Image (cartoon, rainbow, N blue to C red; front, side, top):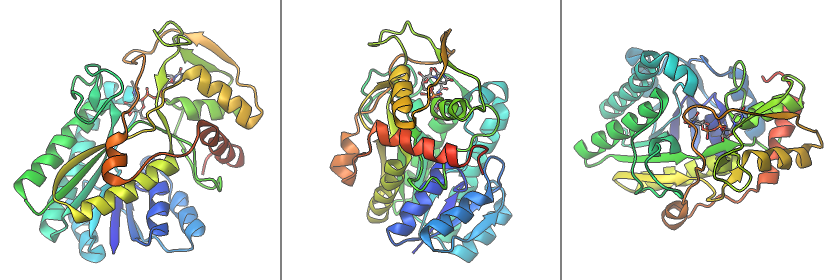
Length: 336
Ligand code: UD1
């Protein structure tokens, strides 16, 4: 059974491709390499010993995608293709709406034409916006997003759920990720942001490896135990395994289901910095900087629905997240 993975040359998709192959699925990947490298897929093949057919195409390109659907005949689609830089989405909103919505519409149209009924989407905790109180459950209020990136996730959830409502044979699973960090334990694949990282863990690892001089901690006056922002960091391999469970669920059900993929534990910026220092043995120079616009004090999941319904639970510790992020970055100081 072949699963089509648009955008799986990227960080979360590449780790998920490995978990799927290890669970016995065949995968085929489509990527335009606008923010990813074919080397990631080559390394996934090396790690699994299995071929992963790789198509270079823009996922919004209907003609190209129709050909790929014809060739691959996927049983399901797990959609990772999208732009994801929050700051850039504020500066270039149309680019974000155009790309993230068009890729999704093309995929759903191709699925309808090909009779492919299972769609799993990389959504984000960002859809909860600033309205809900932690811990977020899947019933917490969504909307009120603070940037166009977040709105694209919110809109794509509506689009996919609408498609499933119109076609009673269709299954849609919306996965709301919290903060993915870590890397495959081999250190061969990992997060490889282009330019200066926006997210905390890749920033820390690039300081550790000497590519950046110091970390700015955005605010130490939040109403949290040490004043710094609290997030639910989840190991990317736990997240990848969550996709395997979500796929099994989608193949056996109809309609739309939403799952939070998080650990349920909040960790502050400074706790993560110190855990990383212990795991790597490298001191991270940092300074306290002003709050970053749009940041919330605390974001963490209630992940109990995924455990109850999917039989999935994150098991890896913050120490493993740091050790694996460090192994990837120190073995690949300049990425792929
Ligand atoms: C961000 C996005 C979120 C997106 C996610 C993808 C915002 C407001 N949210 O989540 O929509 O889904 O990335 O991974 O941008 N921090 C520092 N210094 C840094 C970087 C971050 O102190 O150099 C702090 C932040 O203030 C925050 C925490 O680290 O408290 C995590 O930040 P980050 O990794 O950017 O993730 P989020 O903001 O939670």
